[in-house]
Length: 233
Image (cartoon, rainbow, N blue to C red; front, side):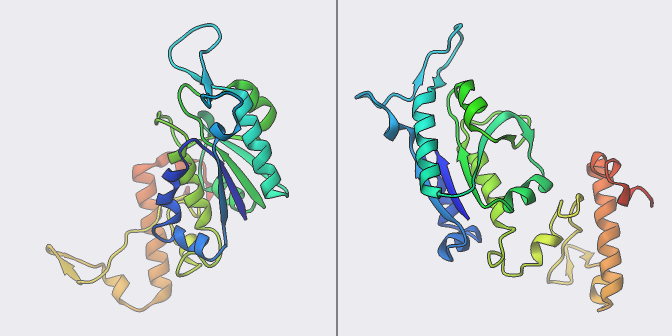
């Protein structure tokens, strides 16, 4: 998969490409990434990428021309089927099913906005998906893009130490993960549940599923209400 990122702060993505399990995706060329800075696609000596909003109001809006030119250049580099994603608090809320769907795309372009946002005409003419990571505001689209890309990378074979790990994590089946325990067997007077020490794989699997459902019902009942598989019990 080729991933292009349209951003004025490409160095921020070092956190994704240089650390942790996601680094493997780039070292193994499972993911190939390239950055396209809108400042490189301006036609004035100041490399201006924003302007005052029509109709007045606070802040600045990212201008359409540099963004369009960066997207066009990114598509030429990808040279194949691609979807353009704009990270925005006005977008559809990201969830695990959308992450899985994105992981199955051939190539992706992430558009990271700044300031008060981007010119609406870019969204209308050049964006396939407008996505949000939650109902709150952050300073730009770079961190949301990294979060989404991190989640996508975890679905790629060869990234995690065990490819089955992604199927056992929270939300892989629409609910939370079960509680996890490791050594020592007793810590601060709390003992590891006996079933996990039993060696009975079926009992362990059933216990984990029951714990996951209970934990989800208690913390996020909305997830259970929308899933018929977890209504009983």
